[in-house]
Image (cartoon, rainbow, N blue to C red):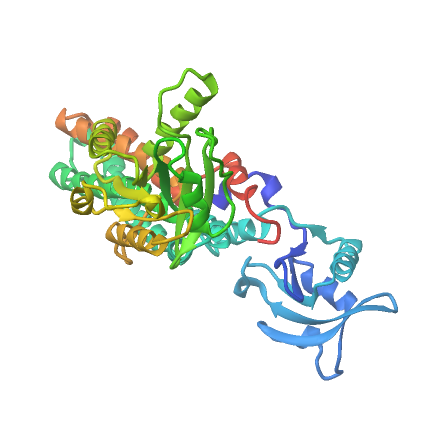
Length: 470
């Protein structure tokens, strides 16, 4: 494991503690380290003489009291996890105490008085990684699972925490390791001019690995959307009701609504969960030419948000907008957007102001336009149904590996480049020692994903973003 190459600061024998839960009536305080059981023996007394914490088996719970000298602090449940059977791979105790801030602080103070220090962010999961309980990509998935705000992001994080992505990477890496070993063996017999690694088989393997790494790289765009929410941009001319629509979708005041055109000069972002799918909405500045420098900046940001969005809602005033203007906007959208998968949904707003059906109503129906009154919140459900239908159409199969982590994405791109170099070397009949260099590079980048090769800087960047207690 990568832990063998870590600096001493990650190999401390300190016993650590921190609250592992937030909110509710009960707080779980986690203690991990070689002195965990010894400290609990000092500060915990079982409620019944027959229930001795020292004799308690792993994964068993006992009722008792935390005390500070002769003073009882709280009635708690103490759960014991022995060594390799615990989350961190060390002796662990979890104290379930009442969630009073005073009680929690007192229990932590007593622990620190007994030379147990507060854990750093992510230190429990870091220790699990260092002790071989999980690899690095699984450890990162723990943070993603905690942060998951939708069913889709939860499912992705849970699958990665269970090692589905790791298994995929390890299989790719092992195949390269087998060939790299044969290439290295050839170098030991360079004077004999022997070939242990079939160049034809290596070529076929590289082709297979290149295809799989490419697929994983391409899945990142989808994974990023599922992890953070499907980005939806609302565009349209000033005063067509973009902010009112946003408020209607969220059923609360998310944006300032005014009769004055150009009220929204900057993008407003927020996320809503609809049927377990997260949508990240952006209400943008109005689409119009302007001499106002601030408004022009807003327009530039609008186009940036449109480029980033997976779904674009084009909102127009049903009572005032001509079919020619609608068609021009659709044409501009198609000309200026490179992503052919980007979905454009037409929304005709202010139907409450219509005194008669617009003469181009038939054309709008053919374009699958949704007719709404954002002000009266009419037909908003039709819009959300359309969003869900679009999201479902782009959903990945449940058993397919999807990349959601930008660090993994970069490592895969570097792997792909190294694989291309090996293939290029084969095409040019390069010697085994030169092929070995690029093979080692590919192995390094694949290994950095799971933590088989890593360093302090990588670990610091990963775990400092964790919650304390995880």
